[in-house]
Length: 258
Image (cartoon, rainbow, N blue to C red; front, top):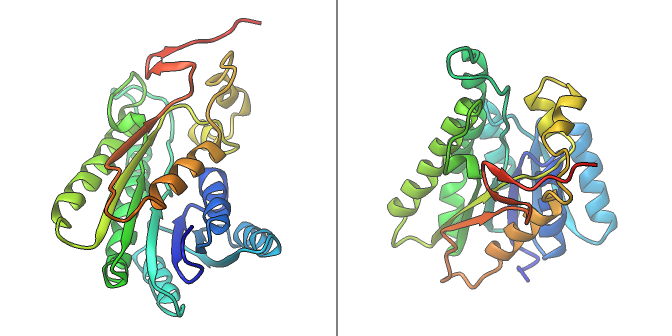
């Protein structure tokens, strides 16, 4: 279990994997800094964690804004505890359009949130992670960062770039007291990912998981994050790929017809 004085920063913490990760890391003993755009959700999450005996702080943050990320770094610096863990979870997908017709604005948004958001927050908190003497950066990418699929060009391109960022950072930090871990989930069913991807179309979002008995849950990924983060610090889990049993590959999913 992590020291109660150790700070873990989780981006995209207002829902889904981020919220589940914040809860799990608080249970592991971290003081969790929950960062996301929706302040009301963050406050509710922090209240829940504290009522369960954990320690948490809400910091509203938009990872696409330099000024907002600087504010996150300042808030973290104001805590009287070392920052030992950063979970770059903020991200998302928009659309399922082919390359020939995919809106440039959707590609831009996916790159800015997934890639540049990870870059901004990592750059802002890396000095504190290094000072801790036992830092860990976890990048929540995707199996889409390892293989492409029709209609997923923009998302796969962003996730491939995020994977490249993590791999490069690990090389550049070799010899420094900071681990770099990449976690690549396959099919994870959360309440918002599909809705964002399909512009609020709940039926289309649900269709992605139609017939899949047990897609992964946010709690499954939070469990992976916690396991990687709590290994002895000399152990670096470079890449953890996790899929539901029903998904043998990006294009191979077992579906049960009602």
